[in-house]
Image (tube, rainbow, N blue to C red):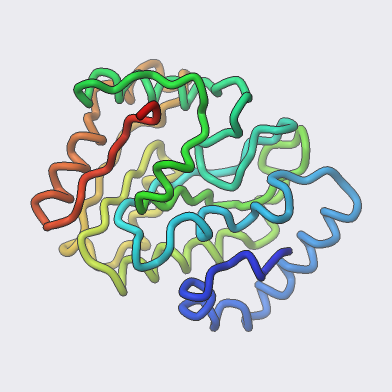
Length: 226
């Protein structure tokens, strides 16, 4: 894995994780997988969520489960896809909710969410790699130990973070947020069509901005077409 792509601030704060046995096992498993199979995202984008949203800049956390497993989709950010890639159903529903929740929001032609990440949204998948065509194929590699440590770190070291937990898998991560009184936790059904529209009406995007402004932080510009 390309550890040199992890920014210094994250690398310094997570230094103890890199020394733990699970991380050595994880590194070996992932490196072997890249040698033998087609793995997504590309090696240089595995830690893209950390690259684009520094620790100091992070003010919103969106937790996903697994990278997209089809060619060209995954770019290291949960729910996001590369430019030119067909927008996945869950992301389509996220955009539909934004359209009704945020005045002036225009549904974009691209599902690339890097502009959000650069504003301080950490779009973190629980598992950071996947084999082509095999959803969940790396769920037993140990990635969750590492990403759980990131969530705990943010909970402990920062204040006024908005955690957006969509679907049962993400909602279970609420247990890792030990300092709930100094953060905002918003939960909802997953935006997947399988949830039969239960995600719609959650208004998480306007609620996020209201909380950020109330705590002296700049709101997120959700519109990707500006």
